Picture 1 (cartoon, one colour):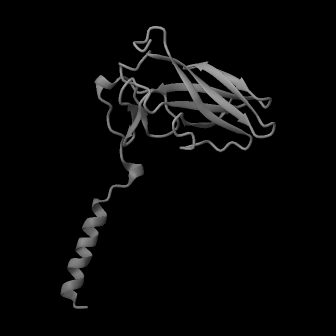
Picture 2 (cartoon, rainbow, N blue to C red):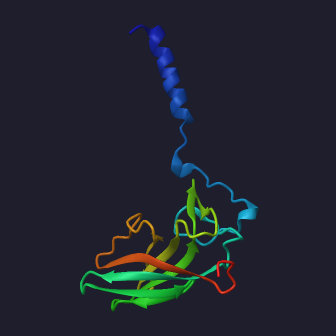
Picture 3 (cartoon, rainbow, N blue to C red):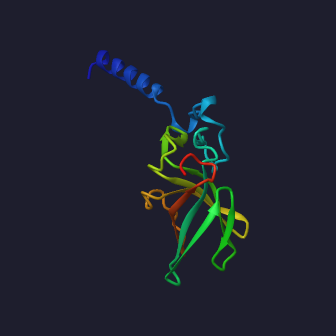
Length: 168
């Protein structure tokens, strides 16, 4: 191939590769002040923003925990922010937040409205106090991002507005 053709091709490839931004180096977008304050999140660079129209409108969720060893399922109702114990192994689950209309835009997770159109709850699971999982449960898509615990299966089965909610 003539050198006249090789040099422009190499230059174009170098320019294209230099324009590709590595995802892990990208900074998360700055949240808008009108969206609310970012919450404590799992160890990641994503931000969870609960909009003011959603803040305080939901009080609790119900999570079904299926035990593969016994074949039994128990449903636990917990306040948002509450932690409860389950099973007989020193396990606990914390309900960190609830978003009724979950959407994700880049590294920002928020709610598009206060309607329960894509309900999701962020949970943390601890084994004897050590966090072993932090992630999301979705009532409409229970298999999405499902945590693979060797014994238990977790599902978001219900959610409850607060007494002060406009939803009542």
